[in-house]
Amino acid sequence: MQQVRVPGKVRRHDWHTIEGMEPRPLLTRIRLDRETLGSFLREKVTPTIPERTRAAHAGAIQELEILVGRDGGVMEVSPAVGRVPLPAELLEPVMEAVRQWRYRPVKLNGQPIEVVSRLEIEIKSAA
Image 1 (tube, rainbow, N blue to C red):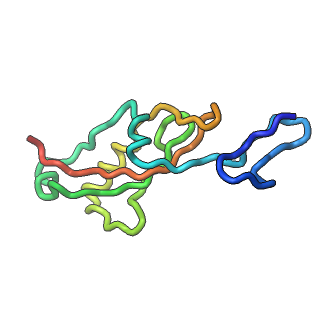
Image 2 (cartoon, rainbow, N blue to C red):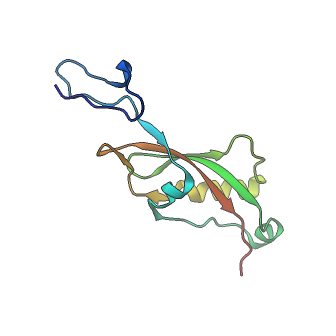
Image 3 (cartoon, rainbow, N blue to C red):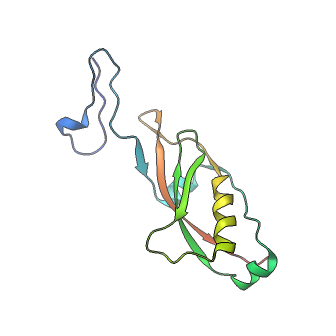
């Protein structure tokens, strides 16, 4: 029977085996920094924001927490905890656009894994 090691210190509960089944790591989700996850980005959708609203909030930055699924699709998007969110007329279009982003699947030990990360979205005026 083959054993799978979860990265980090070796402890007895880092190994997961069930008699007669292929062993699987307990780890199902990892956190990556925004630069590393950004290198996996395949498709980015720009939010549709009315020009008047965009101009009024040019330069505003929103930090978002995202969960990327094993297939590379964005499963969850929310304002980062501890940050003041943008007004709703900006936040909703930004979050909707990010939900449509697509990443190459991130793999750990050859298997796709879910990824949690943070993004910074800057509102820029149309030029």
